[in-house]
Picture (cartoon, rainbow, N blue to C red):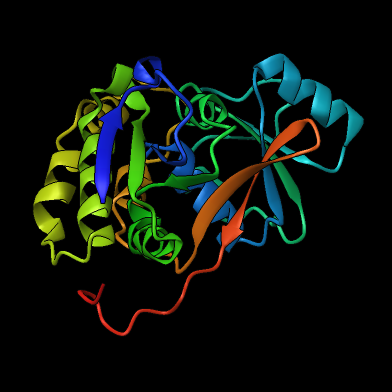
Length: 233
């Protein structure tokens, strides 16, 4: 499998298969939302677009980065999302990096959105798709976010059927700039458990695939074959 690791701005063509990685915190939050019963997640292009969707669909749950704001129901924090009843709900999600990255590759044949909590399921989805070339979109810090790059590299190894010790990849994420900013109060809308929740390897058994549905880019759980064991291709 030929793999590329690119920042959003480095995307020079529409890839056939794209894995959009945002560990801290967009696609950790998305996975948790699905685990808490969300039916689908609409990836909004802007805060105004998210608010417009919320206005048209008052029962939808709108989530954004940063501190709470009028019109939004929750913030982009896995810790703060816990306890929110999302059963059967549609979530509207707008973040600084993750949702932007997914929308940048919306015309790809397959778009998977990933973080450590769905790493193995994402790797199995790639293996079942039998892709010759995969573009990993490293969304944070213009493609330099080490937590996203570490997760992307780990998934790439697992997708190739290579046994990989996750400890080093998780360490890099735990020591990343994003983790430091979350721990140090630089970012707003943060729960003390957010870093730990973002580093829960393979917490959920599904991958997440985004595709156009009408005029919207919609993320849904993507079932994958159950693994025989952790290192099997």
